[in-house]
Image 1 (cartoon, rainbow, N blue to C red):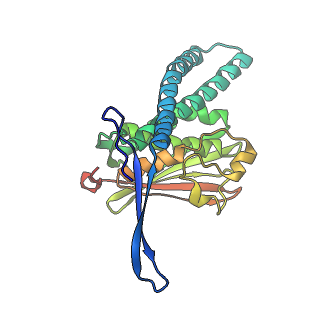
Image 2: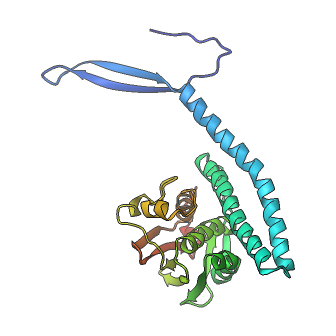
Length: 277
């Protein structure tokens, strides 16, 4: 049956499947074509993406302003221990809120192909030192210490400094959040062939063998994480994996429950190793 559409109607989103019809002897006696109109489903999906995008943008401005105010109060100092403790709690909570908002924006851009990259040569050691310095207050809130081990002196990689900042901050923040009181996070840099290998090691709650293959899925959170009631969106590792692979690197993890986790990833030292878009 042929259905004609009015010229002013929007184009339909159709899924067409064609299959053979066989007789008892396995001979083809005809074909069956199934046409599904996915217009409504796709429209709802786009509406959901648009809502997330708009809501996240609207939330980011006031959340940034609150963080800015708390950071300035923290720099001013001179408060009683009780007030300073409230400021520290506010800073940690504000950082978590901004991370969730930014994760929602980033995942929308990734899935729509708008997560652009600007590759440049980066001094990796200086870059890591800055990230760890920025994470110091966050780590103190969880009573965790962070260290950098560098086995190769100054090392340069090719990458997008903003996107790598998102990926590395995700891994460092996770290593802090899922650690134990008085725990440690050790970041180590090694040269492996034409790549730099970075590892982030913690001695926290770990990841079970059953959960390990799923940790890069959107919104996935491990069973032991849920029991520990640690906040998170389940988007960080999905975004991190996308960023590392876009740089031509790989990411993987080793973990033992209640003993800790080590995340590894590689980055190219030559621009020619970055894949084309």
